[in-house]
Amino acid sequence: MESTFEQPDQTVDLATRVMFTVTSAVLMLALGCTVELEEFFAIFHRPRAVLLCLASQYVAMPLILWGLVAAFSLDGGRALSILLMACCPTAGLANVVTYWIDGDKNLSIYVTTVSTLLCLVTIPVCLAIFTSTPLMHGQQLAMAIDMIAVALVCVLVPVIVGILLQHYCKKIADVLGKLASYLGGLLLISSIIVATVIYRAVFRGPTGVLVIAAVFPPFSLLFGYAWAIAFKEDAAVAKTVAVQAGNRNVSLCLSVLKLAFHDNLANQILTFPIEYWLIQNAFTLLVALLYHTWKTYRSDPVANGESLRILGEKVSQHGEDEDEDSDGA
Image (cartoon, rainbow, N blue to C red; front, side, top):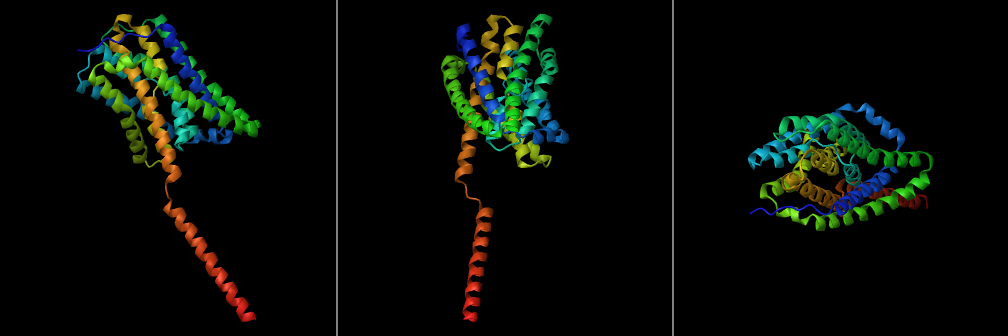
């Protein structure tokens, strides 16, 4: 029998979401401090990479999730929450994760901004197409637009501040970027732990919803990477597309769902976004840690071979010099 998901106290829920927002803003500031202004504007000359990211977000992922919803025969409320999540814009955390795994951070920031603006269209279209439950009314949609504006501010303002510091005060930007990165990482880990404790009841929901929430982050990462490689993009772009494909702005999704439906549907509509929220953040953090561990301890055969070649040339040159000295003597 399915257990009932009881929403936490509104103050606790708000505090948790504010904590994630602050964490995202701090991490975005750290990211902005690493961005060169000239490199960022160069992204406008690479439209194909942008289109690959957006296509994976707004075409491939919704279709794949629709197939999973049909496979598990989920009802209207749960199906809507899953499909709405697929049509939400990228979260700011995606930009930081992209930087951590040596992706194209400039492309990531640009695509996050564009996808957040596009969700003004994708979210209403998703609600109109995929739901048989009551649609949002004009007033509720206006409030959702306010949330979209908040999402844009949280992404753009810290990044712009960081970019300007990098351009005009590089030394300050380097120090502040490192401090913000460490602080943001600690806040992210703390946020995941706190949210897991507060929302632990959601994991007692339907098995199908939990399976989709657990499968979507790793699958979208692999799909996005393969998608970019198929179009012959380099590794940095492929990593960026991979992260963008599956990382969604869960706070915005929750806000839209709460505005659009009655509280008695919370058990159906809020289970997946919260499960996905927790799993997504934990998974992306794990990927970043594993990547840095691999990067630190891996052996580079090419580099090692080049080093041996140079060493061999120096030894040979040294031997020739000694021979010349002997002949001269």
